[in-house]
Length: 284
Image (spheres, rainbow, N blue to C red):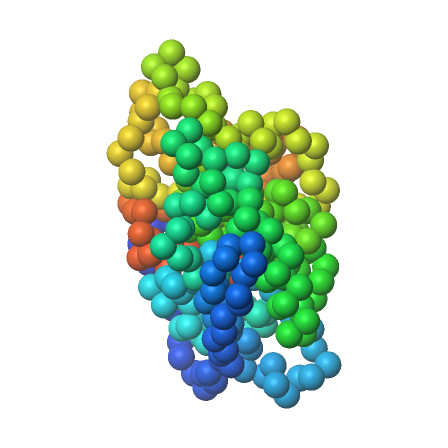
């Protein structure tokens, strides 16, 4: 399949020459929608304070507590130092103990009631987090420069946020996304039915100029509910890509799919492809 970019082994990190530390901040937002304090960490390019006339793309990440595990600090510092990554601002939003309730699809919970707070989480992002970030930092506000990304269930949440808010976000990055999320339990006679994101996208009009970066690993899991020899994580992602393609989104141009040979459902695998995602997201 021409759409698939196979990744084998680890990327060689850029040589560390004249690395200057990123500017970082950490703060909390008292969210009225989530009724809790939300922990946020921010990375800014080293010259942010000096280049006062510059505005930057913004990438929001779910599961901000995992940024060190996926290599964000060193990837940013090396990428900014060797200029392989266009400078941008990264906003990492930490999950709470209610992660399984806050991440999901805003339109409805899954069949077990998980994701029942996803609508509130979306309201927090759109009505509290984004305005605060834009007020506090020198952000570009074009949709093409406003990106949301996440891992696993956080990736499902990121896709839902971007698809549901095309006037704010123009790009989404999903690492091993939980696109199995469904409104009813899978059955033997129709194991691929009732997937919420697939149904939502199929029933929606296309979002002009939206772009998608999707990643899976061949060892993301072992489940194969339809017995076609392809694990569910890959099947669900490819099925979503097919729906997007049918709506007019073009492979390579609008949809970038990376399949990591031997990749697992863990930060070690996601760390391998993080530099490629960041370059795709912000480089001209």
